[in-house]
Amino acid sequence: MDRPTFLTAVISDTHGLLRPEILRLLAGCDHILHAGDVGKAGILAALQQIAPTTAVRGNVDTGAWAEALPASVLVDLAGLPICMLHNLAELEIQPAAAGVRVVVSGHTHRALIEKRAGVLYLNPGSAGPRRFGMPVSMARLRIAAGRVEPELIELPLD
Image 1 (cartoon, one colour):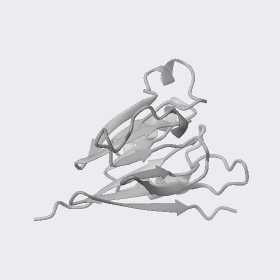
Image 2 (cartoon, rainbow, N blue to C red; image 1 turned 120 degrees about the vertical axis):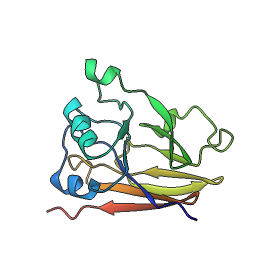
Image 3 (cartoon, rainbow, N blue to C red; image 1 turned 45 degrees about the vertical axis):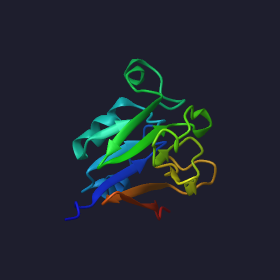
């Protein structure tokens, strides 16, 4: 019998802004991944009220609250090994050799889904203030029976 689908929301670069539109899209997810540049501790507290949340520290995350955040993390969600860090350029492992199936990053504000050497690379884009003329976006990972299906979601903002 197949396990039910495990829904993971993926956000990054909130820079202290948690949009109501993002909160609505997070409802019903089983876990939240935040790929850094959180901006302030209150963001993580709000996310934890929606679902268990795993976050990493980004380059704008400073101060005592941010010291508790790791620079990178390996997490297993529904049997899927995921490596998360803020800046993909700082990846220090060979994901495929380490058994990692998904690498989540942020930093660029540019949404991306790409498969390399059997590893899914996902950048959800920026969920916070619109910057660099980029859209506001997030992603979801649907995990079921050892398979992962990524989805990018661009917010239609004025």
